[in-house]
Image (cartoon, rainbow over all chains, first blue to last red):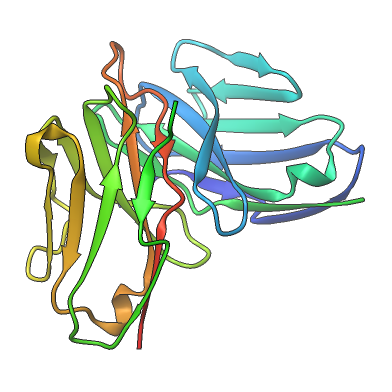
Length: 110
Length: 116
């Protein structure tokens, strides 16, 4: 079964605005990862947050993890047209299997 | 350094025909994954290799799908015979071994299969 449910499923924002998307999961995890996928391309790793971490930054990305609520959020600040893509969260459930969510389509309007 | 290489990028076949996909992982990555991604969905794991051993193939439909990773490097995924529902993007990914769980996966561009 697939873990990780992103919310909202589709997001349309103006360039320069912030984009926030959430991910929920059901079982305990070792870590949670976010990936980006441009149309017709493979997935690209963005950031990994371990289960004992609460927040992590990478450039314009900010990820939070709340293990008590089994949820994570990805914030993209000052969005650009090039950020238009699908974003997936993926959970490492401790069996070396990375389970992906359904994805969150983000459209940044120039 | 070259990334994960997959071929073919696109394949169109008629149902009941066989098809094969090839993947060359990043050099030195001992773990190799095959995922299937349906339109509008996230990738779903089909099989995971540690070197040449298939350590997680519980989600591989073994009646028609097969995979191999000879010498622990390149891998092929085969479908025989293909069905209409097999139309999807087949993604290969690789990673290096690390402590503390699954690390970053490096994905290829995928092989898009259309079964008519």
